[in-house]
Length: 228
Image 1 (cartoon, one colour):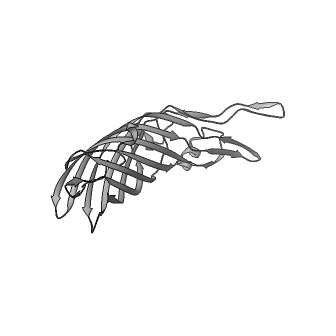
Image 2 (spheres, rainbow, N blue to C red):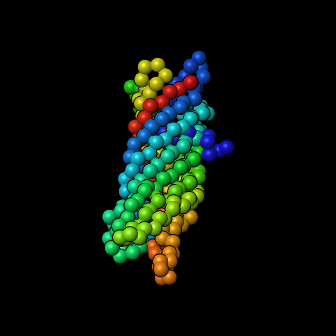
Image 3 (tube, one colour):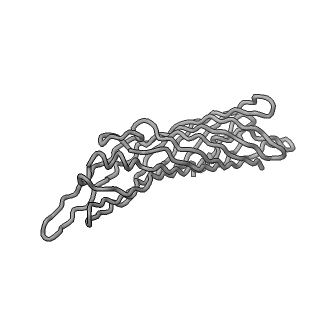
């Protein structure tokens, strides 16, 4: 599957062994920073996302000494801004919230160019494209003895972006790396609405709003790689 051909758009240099350019596996992690509308605290177009973390792994297949193709899997988690949501009173005025986090699973194909910088440092540049599966945070709304749960919803969409990386070769087949990756997508809208409830014959209508935002993340990762 093409979406799993690039588990290494951040991988840089692939060393040569007996005349063969080797494949490379990597693992990296770091902060996941929401940008643009995804971080906005707005009912219209905002995602209320805060800085979280991500983990990414990948495999690089060499075409020649300067170009690679591969696949990346990136898992991201971003908490939602509970205080801002409570202050907007979009659910029940005066209600308190318990919140989960946005999660995202990105499967990315990549074509990578690498350039030697000297002293066993390499620079890489990669366009990225693929599929993102995003999950909205679970919410619990409570007011006195009353409470209502808002379950997570799943949305899918086309994701694209790019990355730049720097790698330093170590002893043997190992290396360390730094990767800055930018991804943006427009998944389906998510509903943050409480269910309608009936209490003593009185119906309390559904409260909340729809999140229809662009899902955009900047990740800044440190990692390790191994070529084989």
